[in-house]
Image (cartoon, rainbow, N blue to C red; front, side, top):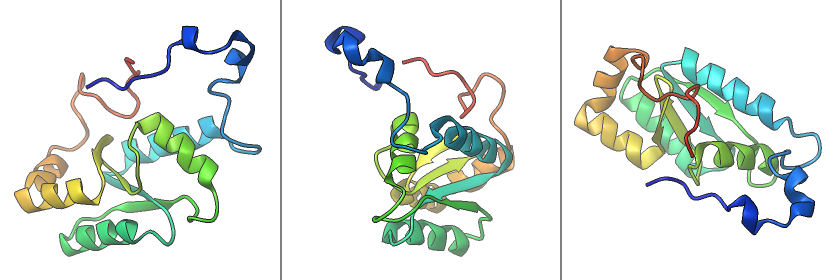
Length: 144
């Protein structure tokens, strides 16, 4: 299912210039996304999370239990840094943290990663390495 985006015709012309300009003062939305893209492309397993979130801790525990090396990037807590997290959610379309990337592909959160570990698919994905040319990845252009 394609993500739905509000049509420009349904947005008052006086605010068009504000769309996609960031999510708060001092938030470098493009810099955040570019750093995540770089990390996802150069790290077999990347976990994006936040402090105080038990599900972020659970996915790390599950990956460690499965002997899977990963890189963890943390974006604030329930009380801070909501703007970077919103930018990340808007970019990925994934509504919650954690977000886990395997070889540059968003695979979901803890529930999805647990399924991949239990089925053996995560091991298979990691043995295949980076996505093959033509497969979607974080650096592929969006087709919304």
